Amino acid sequence: MGRGGGGRWPWAVAVPRLKRVRVDRGPFSDRLLSRERLTGTLSLSCEVVREICGLDNFLHIGSGAAELVYDRERIRKLVRASRNIQELIRHISNNPDVLKVEHLDVVKYAGEPYIPGTSLKGMVRARLELSFSAVNNTVKACFTRASQSIPAPGTPDWVHFSLWQPAILELRGRICDLTKGRRACVVCDLLGAPGLASRVYFGNLRRESGELVRLEVRYHRGVEKLLAMEPGSRFTEGEMAFRSLSEAELGLLLVGMGFTDQGDSVPVLMGKNKYEVMRVIDSDPPKWRGKKVRFGAVRFHVEGLRLLEISEGELSLRSLEGEELKKFIASCVKKALNEFPGLRQAKEPRFSEAEELCKILAGGGRSCPASNS
Image (tube, rainbow, N blue to C red; front, side, top):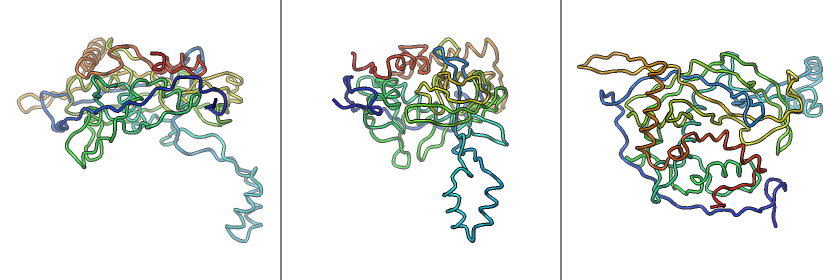
């Protein structure tokens, strides 16, 4: 019997089969302003959930950069001892302790941590694609990045695979490409595709509170050093601008951010390391040393909504806040659940992958919900 996940778990689960389905594509929507459709902006905030499944929860959205730690005086000596750049590189290679890559950094603008709008848009698209599953062998969304294979049990990919069944079992074929045709699935019609502009723009969210923590963590691949936002951190001043949407389409975007038909929201996952429990080897500040922690659970809030209203050729703004806004969000989500068949949230109104993940991790990552049916 073979083993997956680096030899930690046996192939003791019944691996389901992939299923080919048809993607429902229609003519793309008009991008022009219309009095019958919604155009406006949502003001967003985001909190890093303090605790998920009894574990402290951090957020890391990586920039691709890392902190460099170096010994200035020793570097100067090596420079003086080198006749050219090739010799300097060789000297540094022979003295690796003088220049080390340390903690992976987060996305920053002007030195301040941000949640980039591109990351938020990518999360919404991925959640919507995975929230849809086929009805009568037809599904409302294509997959822009889903794998066409089944991962090895016990790996983080297997956890993702288990979490998003049955949708992830579907072979949906080619992605929407409007350079080769005139039809798009509902998600690409909203968020864009090759040859088709998005009707939605996500702005960056700025850190309002919370500190960056230096962590050294152990996980299935070994040890990693990274900077992360501490539990309870808050980001504000985010803006989602949209044009020419139906209320159901706006509701679909809200579903992608974790909003429910009650007008509130559930935790969702974004960023790095979101599918594993990690143990902290070292931290600065030191209070997390030795603890098991989670990453990536966040909750979004809508602080306000402004709608552009067109009447007899004149434009005006209508603002919604408080209870009126909550009722409007609930109404839009309900319309999305009714209008777009196959959404997981229609059967599980408060589905949260951040909380559902607790059950999979508690089972050692071996469980495969669809294999038990």
